Image (cartoon, rainbow, N blue to C red; front, side, top):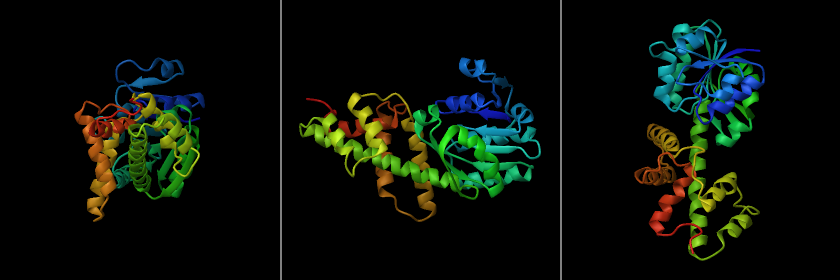
Length: 295
């Protein structure tokens, strides 16, 4: 069993840490108010800062919102690197920019550690059910060390390539997810506005070529008007920013991604930054002056 420092106990991080505790690993985290009662009851302990967590750990896992947050945890004052022991495995499971990830990996390696980028897909449900898809950028040795821990939290673990490759794959994932949410929103909105029973339309589409996880899970959210996250609009905005910034660097046009980002921005402008990303449908409903399921 490993001594693991887990930093970032949000919607996704809490159940992920819980699975590691259930598997018998010893976990510490950074003290941020009162530690979640369930995690505390399983033996998780809170320490003063990332440096102290690193000093107590053989493995560090980070699951925080954005690139600057990872940089602060790893390299800020009282950061992980100040307490890093030779051979420590650092696994970043956040969704952040690929190029800074490569720089973070080099700094950790130069300090004697091993770095793995391992962003995830599957949302809160995937985290709770240990069914996440995990996209890994690492050396072969790093992947081999990380894999047994990743298998506790996820169902599909793929070694994409070297450092940053996991993050590149995650950006691609977020492009596909955003555009599929838009497609499902438009399809269900069209059916509803035309007077069809939108629940039956969704049921029919799930049996054909239009079938997708998004239509299944988020289509139901749209019909039932359940927009508690899940995965927040503002976090998907962040991921699409990474996609569009990368596209500029690569001299690449991503018009669908840009349009999806504008719809998320419309949600945020209406106070929806913390809605589930299925709430994109609300921006389209506003344009149509029609709500799905409305008579």
